[in-house]
Each structure stands twice: as C-alpha cells, then as structure tokens.
Image (cartoon, rainbow, N blue to C red; front, side, top):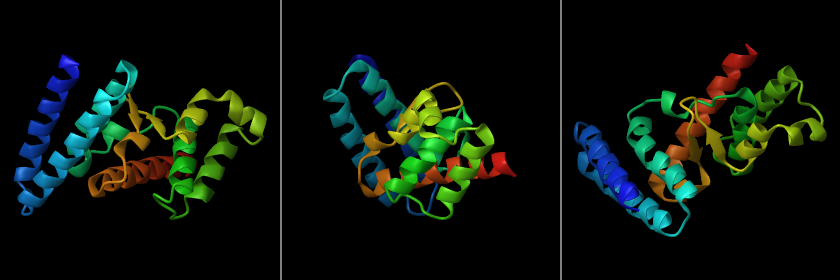
Length: 169
C-alpha cells in the first residue's frame, strides 16, 4: 500500500509538471487530480496485482497526454487484435477498427474461435488488458468513465489501431 501511494504521488507530480507547460494547465491539473483520486480509490479496493495495473494506468497518464505512445504499444499483435476488439465493442473508437482487427487476425492465422481461445494475449485484450511493450499491463477498464479516463482509453486504442495498421501494411 505504501509503495502504491508513493507511485501515485510520483505520477501526480510528474503529470502535473507536464501539464503545467500547456496553456490550459489549470484544467488539465484538475482532470489529473480527479483521475488520480479515482485510481487511488480503486487501488484501495483491489488486490496487489490489480494495484500494479492501476498504477501503470496512472503513471502512463502523463505520457499519453503528452503524446507518448511507446507506453501503450502492445507487445504482441494477438493482444493488439484483442484490444482493438475491446475498443470497438466498448465504443471507444470505431474508425475501421473491425477491418484492421480482422486483417491482423487473418495474418496471424487466428481465424477460428478455437484458435482465438488458445491465444492468452488475445483473450486478455478482449477484457481490456493491454500487455505493453515494456512488459507491463494497462487495464483499460480500470480507467473508468471520467473525461480523462475516456481520453486515455481513446489514445491507447488509437495507438493500438495504428500499430495494427502498420502490421498489415
């Protein structure tokens, strides 16, 4: 719990520093503080494993809002395809995501329901769990439905969609 609190405070201060440089610093700071409060409350109600997922969500927040996409690129294309499906089904993005996801699955040879069930990364993606390229996991569901949570989800979904497009081209 102490480690989670320290991580939360560090993420808030880093996010605040990044946001302070923008013209709408006060608005962003309020949004970040709101997101931090909500994620902190979620941390206190979950297990240690979930805490690290939520902690990654918060620490990635500043980088995402500042345009950093490396924090949320998928470590496998099967996970990216699952995340694209999650994003589509939850109306996060809809710009051609189904077509890209289907093309990625076809290129990976995952066309039958049985093949998809055997791919743990894909199944995790369907649940909104993005396995990042740095070996951590970002839980899109844990971001909630706040304005800032929706922005972060949209950014993550856009990054994974772009990753899928690059894979099939």
